[in-house]
Image 1 (cartoon, rainbow, N blue to C red):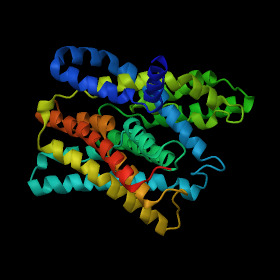
Image 2: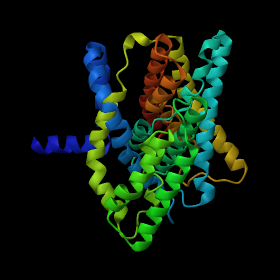
Image 3: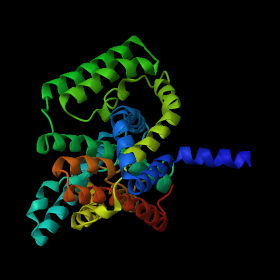
Image 4: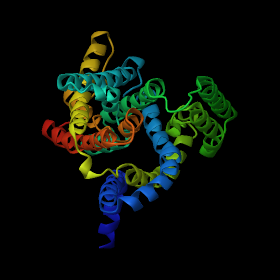
Length: 362
């Protein structure tokens, strides 16, 4: 019995299922006792989203970085550039579908929400990809790089189109550059402990993003490539943070997924459909366009896999929630938009079903 419990717990950790547990708990809590949920989630939001998720994104960056090393599925720049093109296509197509839908309905009051369905939630998309494709499939680093590029471009859109506060490009760029230089210098000195990189350039990068007016969750992404690979620094980093990050994902789902069920409306459906339908269309179209210009998909990733990961990328969730909060003031429209971001999680089981049907697993 103990072995079965241990195996089940390990399965949950290996597949990041605590994220789903946290999301379900948040939905139940927010609808059964909204006042206590808002009080608790409000206290935890900064610690989880702005600090804890830094290490999740760092682990994702590690996986992408290793995929770009010699012998990796994204080693060639002509291959590695394709997920970036796909990210752009995956942002444009949902936005076009959203704007077309509200134009047909004559809902000009919803125009400000055009960027909401352009988002991809890395955490849920990665979980779906791991379950559908398994470890070692080129679709996983492809989707991760696509999602990271999507989030990076999304932060730019958020800063330019929905500035919630003064954005200082000088602080942002200078801080990230300084952090990268410090990380490079540490690498040259042969510093192998990952803590040097986290507490040194990692903190500088976090402060640059935070003070520069952008979300600091990507703070370690520009630092990870400078961590010595030959000295196993990246392996030490992953070994240290693998389990704590699962707890962070549990709290991430708990803090962000609490949306009242009563908030369903027209904009809910438009956002959800734009994400789930628009993402695979944009990703496949942009990839095909990139290939026509001489770029190449990763070996082992065919269009069946591309369709499946495109559906997984349709999970907007947290970044879509950020956009919704920036686009609409508090009230009915914002609640409906948040519910649309949450409803896009339906892309998760859809990706699993489509992946199994198309037999994309390696």
